[in-house]
Structures are given as structure tokens and as C-alpha cells.
Image 1 (cartoon, rainbow, N blue to C red):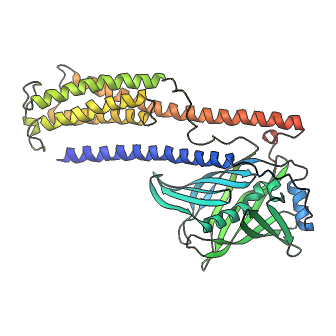
Image 2: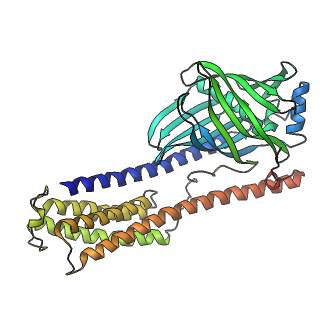
Image 3: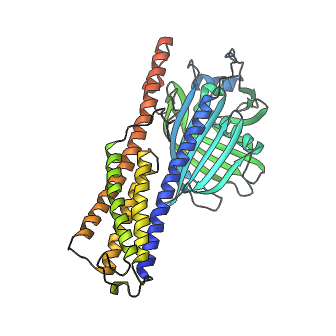
Length: 457
């Protein structure tokens, strides 16, 4: 019975791993779709307004942060840092990527918090056309939150206003943001997205750059609470001053800092439509690669052989066709070889043939199924040797064990190749778009943000 428990546990682990990995791809694909939807929102059509008359301290910040820089259309930043799930929890490592669009202003953020080895939390926050939403999942599989509504709209807009320090041209675009002086060191910024209006107070330091921000924002309990952030490590990127470190806090009954981000990189006016997840499917089916063809061939060979072996065991359950003694089955759940034959027929016979068909149809599950087929064959042969012993006359066990190893290696290589191909295609699309943007800027006399070095404050 112990071998049955071991086999079942290993099978459950393999299946769970495949499901998690597949869900990880699906979540990335959803983020990519949402990003494309954000970037596809048509511009407002309103002409760029004349420079607004700003309070003195705000005008000083504008000159420092923007100068004569042309308006930014899109932004992508990557960050590391830590994140706390509650006031009593420990800070956990986080990695994130965020995209901004500026006409109209909106964002999509995707972050991953590492909780333990093999355990992570993925979160996606976004605001598009004034509509906010938040999704949170454990290992991309178990949903912790999938929220939307007016409170998420308000929270997303407040977050956007606070983070426009990374897109300073939008922070001084009077179509969306207006400013009022509060005192010698503070100014109130108002963001208007249609009927959605939010405010935040910026505190500006002696150097003229923002030190902190405070605002009222809805929390996850539906309460409007004091919220804010601190800006540090200002650097020059593409002719603009932006912070490379931020801390974000809730002023609850027990105030606590829940996010501490450090930027790794920031890029401006780069086409980021397909920078993450699956690209839109091509109109014609892609050509099968060498690994896909090898997987199909190996799966067909295995499937035909396993169907034959399974039928032989089912029609000769006492060893009439394949001379196997019944003695090794003593103590197992099986009195004859009929049920093992049925398992062989279904799992290692029909299963690989289904995987081969899906591979031929370019199904995204195919690389993972190839890996699962190889692992299942290795497990089957290992268990068979443990129960009935090893036989070298003929050496079928050794041959099929080797076949399982080969299929497993092909599946693993296919998964890695697919990931590399996706990364190459997405980076290629982004690079080409950056070249197009750079050429367009050169014709208008604008500098290329991509070629501008980052300098410390």
C-alpha cells in the first residue's frame, strides 16, 4: 500500500505544479490584455493647454522636474523592495512592474510578494478611464481578492496622483491636474478624471522637490483613512527629476508603513503593449518547432506501445499474454493485472496521444503535458521495477525508462524555449517601438529618453 500512497502523492505534486505554472501564464496573459486595453483607450482629443499659472513653490518644482521636456505618453518602471500584509506582519520581498498612460492618465501595476519558498502572492492594481480594480491571488491559483467599485476608483486615482511624480509632465498637465497653494511649503493637487475627483497635499522640501504626500483614501475595510508616502533619492532621468525610493503608509489606529519600493529602472515613451504575457495570437498557425515535433513523435511511440501493453494485461490479467507472475502483487490492492493494465492503457496510452494531438494543434498546454507524460512514465517504470523486479530479457523496462527521461527532457526544454521565444518576441516588439518613437522624436527635435543616462541627485 505504501507504494500506492507514494505514487499518488507524487502524481498530485506533479499535477499541482503544472496547474500552478499554467495559472501563472494565464495571469500574465490577463495582465497583458489589461495593459493593451489601457493603452488602447483613445486620447481625450483636448488640445494641450497653455501653461497654467502655478503657485510659486509648485512652479519651482515644475522647473526642476520637467523644464522644457515634451509631454510623456507612456512609462514603464520596475521596482524591488518590501511589502507588509498587515501592521503585525513582517516585511516580505516584493518585485513589481508598472505601466502608465497619460492621455487620459491611468496605470497597471503587477507585483509579486515572496512569502516562502514556492509560495507567493501576486497582485494586480489598475486604473483605466477612471475605473479601478484589484486582484490578489496565492500562487496565481487561489483568489484572495477580486474587487472593483467606487471605492477602488477613488483609491486608484489617489494612488495615481501620488505616483505621477514618476511622470512629471502629466503632473503639470492642466487637463487633468490643477494646483493650489496651502502655505509656504505645501500645495494641494487635484486630479480630475471625468466625474472622479481626488486631492492630495504635497510637502515640498528646501530643494524644491516633494518630500511627502498626504491624502484620504479608502482602505480594504471600506473606510476612508489618512494615507501617504515619502519620496527619497531623487535622480535625473531623461531630463526629468524623479524619486527612486518611496515609502507608503496608512495612518490607522496603528500607523504602519506597508510598502517600501526602490526603483530598478524607469523608461519613457517606450511601447509596452506586449511587454508581459502572451502576445495576441497570429492569424496563421505558427510553424511547429523541432522540440514540438520530437515531443509528438515520442508521445505517439509511447502511446501505441502503452495501449498494446495495457490491452495485453487487460485481456490476460493472470499473465496469459505477457508472462508476469501474480506473486509480486501480493499485499498490493490488485489481485490481477487487469487494473494496472487499465491504468497503463488510459494514462500512458491514451494520455500521450492526447498530448500529441494538442501539441499538433499548438495548444499552450502541450509543453507542460509533455513534461507530465515523461514524468508519469518514469514513475510507472520505477514502481513496476519495485513490484515485479527488473528484467533484461528483453530490456523493455530500461528502454521505456530511457524514453521517459528523454520525453521529460524534451518537455522541459520546450517550456524553456517557449519562454525564451516569448521574451524575445515581446522585447523585440518593445525595441522596435522604441526605435520608432526615437525616430519620431528626432524628426521633432526631441531627445530620446532611452539614450539619456540616469544621474544621482
